[in-house]
Image (tube, rainbow over all chains, first blue to last red; front, side, top):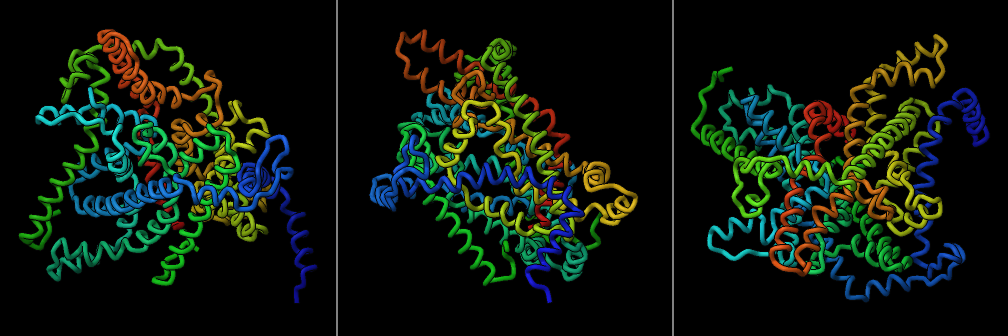
Length: 308
Length: 298
């Protein structure tokens, strides 16, 4: 029988012999406490009227005041709709493309062709968001951008793509797919390399066509990876990258480009409304967590694959 | 190797469609990159008037000379090199010392520490509370803000831990222990030297991350002398186009200004990406491995 006391004694014994390991891991634990857990405590200001001079604890409690203010404001539906539509569209177009690319590359037997394609398609992933947005701005410029040059050559009028809220989502999603499809396909290519080649050989003997082999061998083999990636992607539905939306944003397209994180930045850091924007940020975070748990639960109910 | 089974008609159609589509994909991805390169070597007037499409025209290096003559770009470049070097070094050390104990079977408290890390992948304090903490510990306008935050990525730590667990025989560590090595010596003399491939992957992931880092600079730095390259790039590539188009003045002057801004845009992109571009071919064989190890963990 092992009680808590003997368990403690066991740990004390282990610690005495392995204190070096704890010393090694200590800086990492301290880092997490200071840089990630301390700010979590700071989330309390979302329920207070934060005054810097009074500190977090000394400020006055206001309960859910900031939340109700956000939920009843004009910006609530706008930022929520923008955040959701950008991320859902990115998911809709950005999720299947790497799978398709991986399957297409898997069918290529010409080595150099496959290698060249992989090298080229992975490359944009390493472009920084700033450069990416710079390229988008230049290519879409109404006066000197290549897209408008082509339009003019076809006799159409030049369009200020980034100055019109109508186009923001398309620009965001298309550039996202352009930049990350290749990189995201690596994980599926890795999964494909694990398929037993004898399965294809058996299918060949049975006279299966390529499409049949893809449908009955390749795709089923990818399902576990697809499910995991889908869960992970759903978990970040509410966390659209701040950088890109922020960099492509201007006063003219704000109607569709203002997402929750850029709103928090504008109201909180630029506008100084700490408590209010902390509440908005917290709302975003909580929805994110709930989504992840829900999607994971659904997936583990449907099959055996789940994150935990 | 020729297949012994005759290719069916539908398979031939499949191959034709597949290769055609992939060739198209190749051009869609490659052309914008290629265009930036040729535009950086071309006469900016020909670029902005849409006369450069497939090869550089009015070949010259003026744009590059202008980029290197600008103090703010060079200062940003220097800052970014420092941030990347120190930041990646810190990342490596922290990831190794965090991953090693967690990779050992029977390390007590492993689950607790893992859980503590995993939670941060799904929940965080958010921008404002984080800002307030950084302010309190004096990180605002401090170059360390570009180095310390993000010192450990949980995802990368798990990849390294998985590598330590699966690719280094535990018997080797046991043998070293019997020979009188302590934990620290086992780590530095056996585990780290045997983990070079995965550590190379970490250098790539963390290093590129630091090189492209923008957010921390934007939020926590106001002193221009501390700006990383990405913030300078932002003012050149994105903000300036708004300023020049709204600046009043006579048309010719305005056109000249636009031209000047336009002329260095492409070359500044190339200059800022050169380190990553040079390393890219070497990186490729490693980063694929890294993603795969991450995938095994699931």
